[in-house]
Image (cartoon, rainbow, N blue to C red):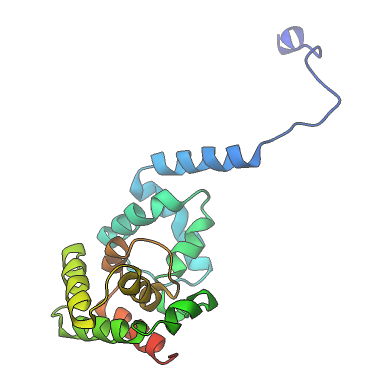
Length: 187
């Protein structure tokens, strides 16, 4: 039956052409449509293979997927995203050079570390972060990019990236303090 319905009329000598950008976009749509537990089961082997440390609680995993899902085009993209919150991979990147040269940057990071130290508990909520950010703003007398970029450098090692209020709750207070100390040591 297949032989009877198959026709070579539409076959061409040239090879198939795939639009890689469109394929990545389609894959991203497919990944975003997956339920979180199913998506996590696909991502987890990649993280384990790269020896990326992560919280094992389903609550944290779901929260992390809410943060990172919009940035996933392929499963391999998860490696870079989750590596940014693993302390053993933290480093202040060369693109932070300009921010480190600003007069107010060191003070902002010192006040960030100070406010974190004063916080009770080991985790921060989005509201905790916003309160601390406002306190750093007052204590360091900084605002705008002179507030946000140094804080971002102290959290992820670069001045641009994921919005801090959604990223910081994925990290422990001790991790954030360690990163601030490491950043300050480079001034």
